[in-house]
Length: 220
Length: 107
Ligand SMILES: [Zn+2]
Image (tube, rainbow over all chains, first blue to last red; front, side):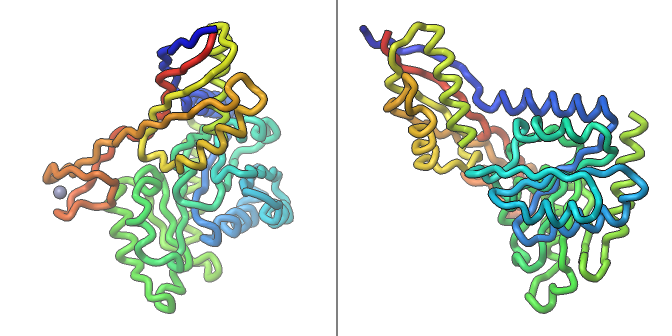
């Protein structure tokens, strides 16, 4: 036996890119608008999906994939609203990836809108293309008004940036204008929505955006 | 864990092609912006490779710096920041790849 050194040039992340492309193909074929919703735990992602299900449930066929490290609390919350839902437990992983979605999307071939709730953090999900059409990042003012400048990458790549719980801004001494400004500096084209889901602030704006992108999708 | 698994799978595939009996070292180039904790990756690599011919192999990591530059004044940074001190928007390039460069094996 002797020892040899082999030069390799293997792109490890290539597999995720390939699977994401396959997911994208599947979604396109079935006319599904898929949205990757990212944000920290407690930012309001699950509530956004629940409220969207209530608002659109009888108008569009909606599905939801709920990603979480363990447990199925979010899945149960969403399934109660009468939409097709699927739980993905990632175990040790802190993000969803194209492979995990690959297995789940087959069940959603009959929906028009697929919301995918990513695992609750602002770092790891950034690098994993799931094959989604749009990326939404949700933060809440309770995370501090410097949360956007601390995580530039995820905001740079977002299509929609939601700043949630704005009604609490004063109580937690967060400057919403600063957050909007930070987001705008990082991302010139994202839609920025100031929201408070518990007080119905900004939710209509979200629904309008959803309907807008869905009609665009149907025309593709 | 999926990173470690992907590394092991790729390493084993190439080792098999070369008819290797054992893999002793793997050199991986990693973008700093992937924000992967090296100790965690090494641990996951050991777990993912156990029971294979890559069990016990050394995982060597080389970190690659991204290119970060202000679009307005051209100032360069070592770490990604939101906004340049001059108020300009920052452009970030690279630093997000993960490439297996070299595999040492016994044939
Ligand atoms: Zn500058």
